[in-house]
Image 1 (cartoon, rainbow over the protein chains, first blue to last red):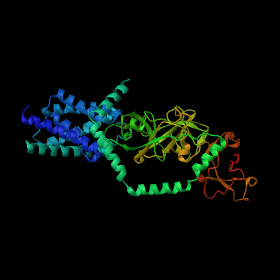
Image 2: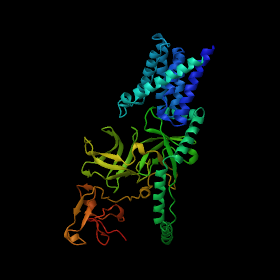
Image 3: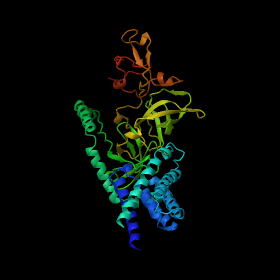
Image 4: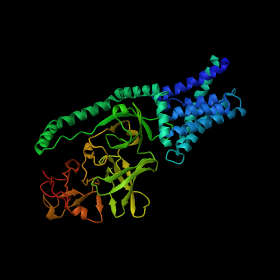
Length: 156
Length: 329
């Protein structure tokens, strides 16, 4: 693996660690963007669809272990999002920041939708979350992803 | 079986890869509990101090009386205090983590309560943390009854115009529950001990189910108030059934509490302080068959002087309610 490849792995690892430390460990919760989904989406751009799905599945298990009832739902959601993210390489190039931001926004929102479907909340009392809160968190995730990629490119 | 395997897998992940993160989370929760909102903590401390000053002789008097009656000391129920940590955006928010686990004596299936009443139950237990679900979870069910023990039913979560509430189902059709009636756990089913306050009746729910009626119940513990909880630990009794926790909340089972605020005039023959002055609060639960109200109960309840309206004169020398036996002084 070349330097850029290791750098990409490092970026994903840093995002995953930051996600768990800031969001769960230090309890900042939604003050911190969903860096786990951002990490999966960025990793998926560099991996084959199968490998990306595998990475999504493993990280989904990690995330789901914190909410036992959502273990499978979280793993399934991140697997699908990672697979779709890997396939999106055929649609647009990563060099375009606007498209990358759109990709992260759609990816995060899609993750929430799939998670709600998998947990059965889509038609429940919290369904309004998908249309009121979820777009804002997706926007936040997209912005943080752009910042992370910018820093990464500046360093490598 | 699959659920068990899933939970085992989650437990393995939490006890290995995520262990440092969870340890950090527990530390932060402890620190926040220590430093957070000192004004509230000070107010609670002052209230407790004032309460304790008024109760200083009660414990010794109670012990002496029990000795005189030849009763052994009642073993207190164990409670494990913990903080609730929620993981937003991830699946159902009715699931939460609490900062106490098997090391502190928490067991799966234990009831989780707050100062106001029932919160939920423990679902999964690790060594230092546990996972529980609260009453807003779609799977939540609790066997419930009115405080006087006359009417039983099952409470389950419902959404009332965006507000999460509970629905008391399976009550008899011939019985009316007035708004304000307190609902407590009945202890049936062996999941929750008897007497944990759940909520108060808001009113009848739309739609009746055959010969049964449903009522909306406003829980005493709102979702935003589930920050600090108590988890019921082991007691001298092995099962939840038969354990009465009502006194822990300052209530007594078997009483019809005058919570609807409706005052009824007693007939002059029953009046103690003269005509026109004798008013008592009507029992919130009314039944078509008045047998329960007119016949003395086998175990008469002591007077609940704290819950009577201030306008009610002391009627302990005579019957407080129509047909109710005079409580011993």
